Every structure is written in structure tokens, then in C-alpha cells.
Image (cartoon, rainbow, N blue to C red; front, side, top):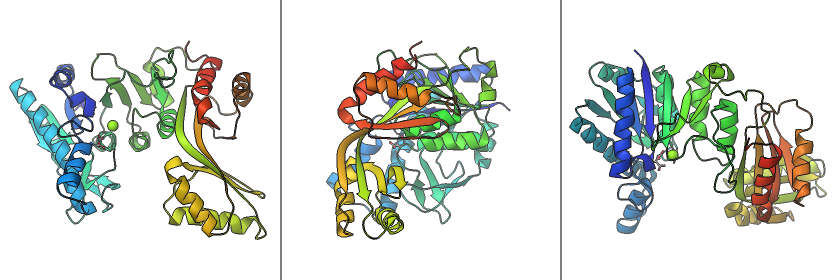
Length: 406
Ligand code: ASP
Ligand code: MG
């Protein structure tokens, strides 16, 4: 049985016209001979009638603060409405389908309401239904804890539902449908000549997703990578196949001619604050332990960490900076704080071990008088921290320097 998982996001289901496209993609793949499992998100965005944020807002305004367990019960409704709407549309087109909730589709999770981890996916029911129905529709973003409570997988979690199902079903491919034509070399709102990529490796897209490119949830990629299930990120509104995400061996079939590229894309995270804490009399070990323990205990997530005998430099989101500083001052530290920074990432599987990439980055930024506040690297990414005012120019300069528009 050739199984394909398709996932349609909120914007792909938001209007009658978009839903016609969804039906078109379903029909086309059925005609190709696939058995289809279709994962859906709630329809639309904040303000649209049954979008996730709208449901949250409604209860907040008309009810009140919900306990986390009940909040998850509310949240799963958005996907149920979307899935049943699609079922009705398919019925009208004489395509038989069945709707399964996350629980019925076999998603077993821990009990961390609002951000549950998948323990395993046991898709027996999905397989069973596939033998008699054209399409099995699964509500994304949800599961069930071992004692039977409904849980959700964290915002944006239906991408994760799709790749986890793809892995559990040994699907041939997982198509993530969205409102853009795949993955681009940079954010097209900032870099006008950003170019669509025909393929990226799991590692590259993981870095891009973690570094602010919002096309696919990083957890979804990590799950796909573990099971090597190929993923395509593509647009609901066209027939273009978008970007293939796979292991490099998976690209052999793809005629791209750019296998040798060093840099794949440029991404960014804005609104971060750089915090510098210098070692005082206590000595560096004490400082590092105290600082990072205090951040963890206060649920402040830290990033871009440089630890040296002289102290520690790291970033937090601007929204956490007041809290972070208060915590540090309470401990007797005198942190230096730089709000309004942006973390710019140069990502590419080919960076590893290639001399001169950092030199080129520095050159591109220096030519535009952009100050580098901090930098770090891994084998697929080099990060630089810049002032937020410099971010747009930095992204454009790097995109040009690495000739990503070609
Ligand atoms: N509807 C959920 C959310 O808005 C899940 C998703 O869209 O992936 O976060
Ligand atoms: Mg999404």
C-alpha cells in the first residue's frame, strides 16, 4: 500500500476557495494511486470563527481563565470542526472519508497539557480505515494521555502530527501544504530576490526552522529525520511541488545541479536581548552555575551562550529581559543589557570544514558597517548577533555575498 500523508494548515482551510484547492490536491493524489491520510489544522487565523486563537479568546472573554486540562479540551475543537468540514466537502465529491481524532489515530502522549510530548503513535485504526475509505482525515495537534485525557502538542503542532503519522505508517511521503511555495533562501518580505529551494536536508531545515523560518515546525522535522520519511513543503494554491526535505541521498532523483552549494539559506530571530555577566570575586564557576540555574528556575530560555573565565554572555527574548535582569540583580550581579538585537543565521550543510565562510560573513557585514556583537558556529550554521536596526541590511548583504539569488 502506497501511503501519502497530506497536511493542510490553517490558511489552506480558511476560505471556500482554499478548501476547493485542498479537495483538488486530494483528488489528484488519489488518482495517482496513493492511500491518503489527511491531517488538518484549525481553519484560519486569529479572528476567523474557529481558529485556535479565536477559541481561546472567546472563552477568555466569555468564561475566564481555564485550567490547562480544560484548555486542551477547548483547543481540540478547532481541528475537529475543520476535519468534519473537509469530510462533508469530500462526501459531496463522492470521495469517501472518515474523521479520526488524534486519540483515535493512536497518538499517545504524556500529560503536559498544552505542550504534550508524543510517547508513541499506534495507527492500527488508521490502517484499518484505509482499507475501506479513500481518505482518513486526522485532526492535527492532539493526542491522548495514558489516562484518557485529551492533550495538545504545542502551538503549530499539526506539522508534528503529520510527520509522526508519516513515520508510524511508513508513508512514502508527507506533503505539508501551506500558503508559500516551499522553502526560500531567505524571508521574501525582507530579501526581495529570495529564491525557492528545490531541496534542503533535514539538518538544514531544522536549523532554519529553529532560526525563525516559520514554514514548518522544527519538532516535525526532527521526527521526520529520525525515521527518514521525506517531506515536501508546498503551496495549497499551486501545483508546484515545492521543497523536498530529505537526507542528501534522497535528492538523487531531483535535478537541481546545486548539490555543491555551501550555504543554503539565511534566517533570523529578532527581538532578543544580549546579557553580559562578568565574573566577580566568586570566580567563574560559581557565576556560571548561579546564572544558568537561576534562568532555568525562572523558566527563562537562554540562547547564544558564550562562557569564558571572564564571565558569561547569552541572549534571552526581549520579552523576558526585565525578568532576567531582576533575577540576576537579586543574586547580586550587575548584568550589562543590550535590548533590541537580532540573531542572523547563515545555514548550509556545506559549511562544515570549509575555510573562509566566516571571513565572507565578516566581509559582507563590514562593507555595510554592521557591528557583530557576538558570533558562534556549528557544522551547519554560523550565527551572528547584530543590532536590530542592522538586521535587514545584514540579511540582504549576506544573501548577496553568498549569491543565493542565483
Ligand atoms: N491549530 C493549532 C495552532 O494554531 C495547531 C496548528 O495549526 O498546527 O497552533
Ligand atoms: Mg503551522
